[in-house]
Length: 386
Picture 1 (cartoon, one colour):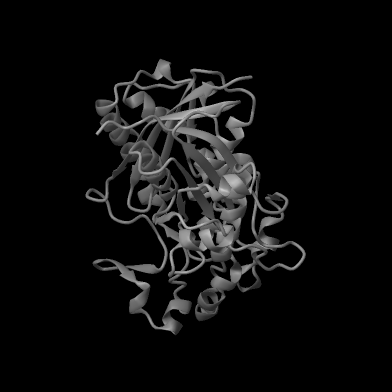
Picture 2 (cartoon, rainbow, N blue to C red):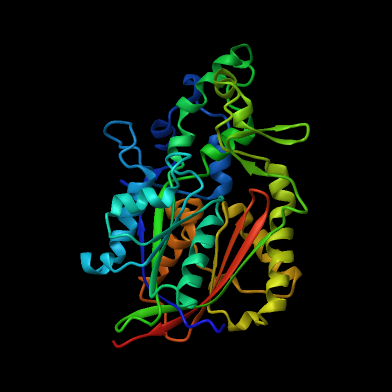
């Protein structure tokens, strides 16, 4: 069955409250056991992020929005009016940290939106689940199953990164606090890397009558879980035979070990993220979709830290697919690392920048270190009437 053309005709982002700079972060997220992190400044110097957003209300110190509410705000921005929202046929929403285990994130977003019954799907994962949501929405329209669809990625990392989630572990290790007051590095590391935000796109079977649209040429997603163990995880602990589920710990043990905290094996990440998600993955994608680097006008890479920028370029050089850095577009330093929402937030800023011209091609790259996966997506600018 031939797929019909699909166009992204609107893109929106929602970044809650005012931006939080590097000196405000620990006050907003709290100090574990009342002690400042020793790792914070080192990590911030490496990742290059200068500001980010949290759903934590600066006036109360409490979350002012749920993840579902944040997603709904981004989606409402896509729509000209309630009539357009009410015409929605397929809603796909994703997050690595939904507000609850059950029910799924997307139906909670649908409940917030209040639009009429439609197909509603949630995708799971970490950074990559935003692209998997977009691929489901794209295929729904491309197959003719839906005339339109919305894909959304959102993250509320601040709730998981708040000091209150780690205090029990810190108290359990009180004897060690004088020697090492910070958390184990794989936990403390991510407190200064992740932030909150949501982004969404509207897809339809024709370009917008006025303004720009982005035609989706293809979306490729590859998992390398057959090669490598879990690198980034939450709700589990590393055991002798791999991850042990949170369901195997009692409530006291979960608190004492911060089992629900997000953790990352930084060495495993550094050794494999470029080799696997750039070099191996892109070569496999190019074998299916022949493409030359000079055909790319904008490269939108999602990476967690500026530390990886030059390493990413080296990876492209290693497979002879060099896209000069002046063609790269990212807003990591000003919007933070928002996980599954990052690619939507990047696209929103570029889409509304006034820079895009008819016929230009955008190559998007989203890796995930959960168990090492990678996605690439090719978009083309289509201009409607001026």
